Length: 273
Image 1 (cartoon, rainbow, N blue to C red):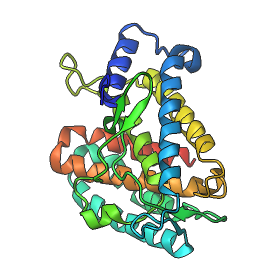
Image 2: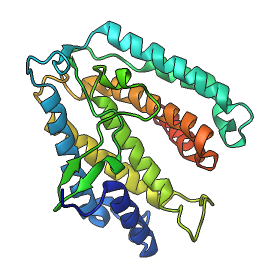
Image 3: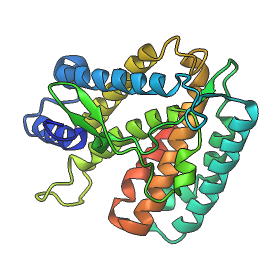
């Protein structure tokens, strides 16, 4: 497939140029500064929604046939996220960068419990399962989605299990957060996190809004959910699931990167205030 590279490399190059030329200044309107990039991410969100609509089509193949989303499904997912939170906190003991999280353990579990289930009908389907900027190729201002094997540390049977496609949305939102931090992780700066993240925080907020808005429009009337507002609690639950997974991964594989999921989890706590 002819392409211009993956979304991760493109985004890092874009952010590094933006910071070098100071176009990401905090006092500038994010749409006027980042308009071309946000438009590209809206295209990505539309293709993501189209992928999920395709997974929701009835084909007669039991492995891909969509199934109704039930209250028991949501309750089971919340139990699983709580279990993974317990596993994560067990790994955090003694990690200096994780101390702000250890002090807010009770709040994190309360946030998991507070993720409201949808009131209307919805569907469980197959989904990508490890969706982030590195899994999409840019081709003529459009996207090709690749690598459908799921998260590397999870067994194949789990990757095949039907779930909410909002897990893919959560994965891409977390990828934007990783890109924000990684924009400073160059050979020149190493892993010295800057004290002022305001310019890139502006970018992240803008790209999140652009992606979610375009995805909601692309999946309107698909039957995946009654309305996008109705599944806000599910999306938050899956962001929590993803950032907890990231914490475990970084502790076990890249300890210097623990700062990234720690900041993401603290951000989710802050968003609830």
